[in-house]
Length: 295
Image (cartoon, rainbow, N blue to C red; front, side, top):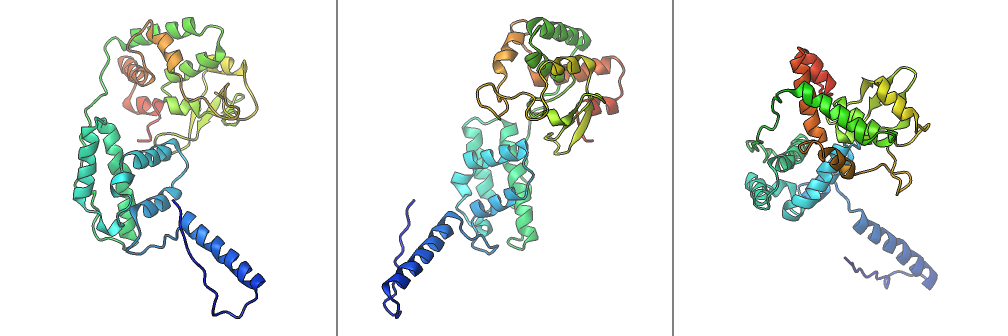
């Protein structure tokens, strides 16, 4: 976008140099006001401005990034330019209907409520609105967690396959050994060397789904593999293409396991893990802890 403004100093008894200097200052202020518009909390504030003020206060986690992307992709176009005070429940229901029509998964659609709901609660707390338009809107998510029969046997098969596929490759072998411990993909790929304590056999996850730092036991087989390519700091799984960044995609490696176990995925492995623990009589509290649940 381009903007235009004229500065008129006819009534000022200034010489040319002073007029130019003043015009330069005002031009700079004008440009900055367009790049960084003021966002005082008043009844005219647009959702775009208010929600990004809200995002700025959130911790920098992968979940926050997901919500920002979701807002930009599926919400901003429809109500981003509306005043916060003008947004009604019907507007949000219309957005949800559009998301259903383009085939978004129910879990993805639910992100709309998960990011808008706390935003409107903040608007209520700041006395911008009296009613949260998200109240009463629910998204039904089909249950996907299943009890897996013969899970212990399947777990042994996956363990054997992982060692067979990645034998001599400590980088990728350690990724899937972490997955065998119940770690999520994002938790594994976000690991940093400075958060691994080889001496005390522990590691810390900073960016977990529940937003809390968590410490886990580092099993000896994983420790052995990590020590083969360990560094003092930085990403454990740093990209070989872009220095200083972690890898983003392990689909190619996962497909090597799928060649033997077609229904394999990291998330499916969490289901197998907890089902095999149940077969061994492990308590629900310990199973929940193994998966990193905070409750």
